[in-house]
Length: 83
Image: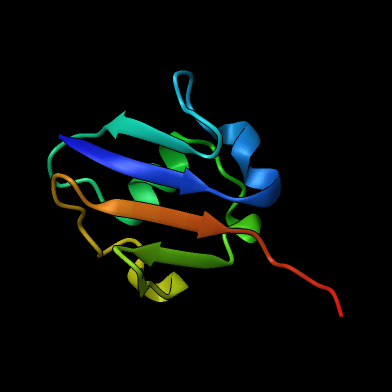
């Protein structure tokens, strides 16, 4: 199934080939979880601070159980600091 993946800031270097700017379409197995996609992209878990599916926050404890559906958008931000 296809999902949209959006990776922000330093995570954009993990975007699969064919992605444009910070967005890519990704084929994942039916039943893939948010954590499965994070692992597939080889994203460092400690850098996956803010994770949203269709704009809804997915906490670290929910990521393994949150199964993605075709057409959903997964967006991931690293920790940010500033003032």
